[in-house]
Image (cartoon, rainbow, N blue to C red; front, top):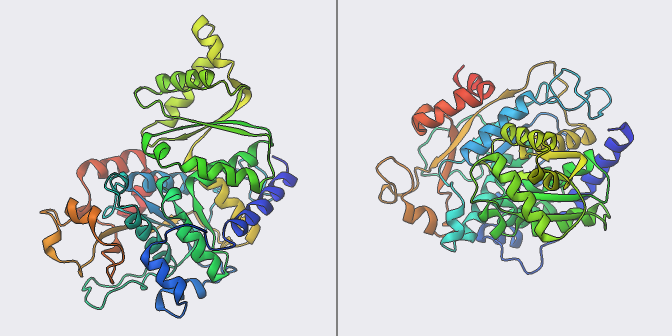
Length: 416
């Protein structure tokens, strides 16, 4: 990518943040917490917004979402090397893109998984969780209850907030955007689906045909039917197309790829695909890339038609790589890198039930009982969950083994 395109993208991305946060969302039912803040900006909950310094280089890069998503994305960010750190071009330079930066991953064990909020019609509760995660990333003490006996922890304030879970784009993004707009601070917030759409403009030009391979939950929530029209408008792109499919009945990556391309062929959209966004945490991206390579090199009659739907410069887009690229461009545009000579670091946190919550609503393991977890009233006056340093005792052996085997960089920083 040329330096000119990198600068153009960064400028458009900065404008996109401004455009998407320029007013209160019309017709949206905000979480009660957000409504209260919007009605009275003198409240303590507004302090994290009003005190945010958009020029500060001292903050951390905060991530919030399900444990597996946050762990995987943090692992990628710790070793990402997609850009030349001197001129900003999209070219690896054997130096970490986020040298000297500190990541603050918050593994939301207390509130995830998120699909259940939709299943029981508790979408407002999920919006409340997202708003609280956003505000507490900016000021960790904002929701601390006087009755909470958990000790305080030195968690650094965020200079960028990343939400890893796609459902947050449908349930929570409007609340965060509106709080951001009211603050006037243009706080950098990245939602993974929007990042994947924005990433395409780093690597490609207008007039793309984009496929999205996702899950029934994300498809049903209408995430991409909301994200793509906004991104296309921000880039004044009237030529690109996007198609969202869910080949959820196929288990293997090769099978998912072939099923997806068959769906695309049947849709009649036409034109080879510039990229496929893979928004499905169950997909092994390395295996999917191998499946693409095998298909492209195959001369089998059944594969010839399918591979014709892939453009010559076809690319698979993962949430991890897209978020890393968008985050890098934002930080470079705003000049908020620390410029410290050091490897990227991470300080790991986890959400747990707050001590202000009655033991009667907890299960035998000390987690929220299912009924309370998904049916509790949004904004009960105190936060139902707290953010504390990550410890082995909060996670299953299987998850800790996953960290050790699949996120070795993050694991080494966690156990040091």
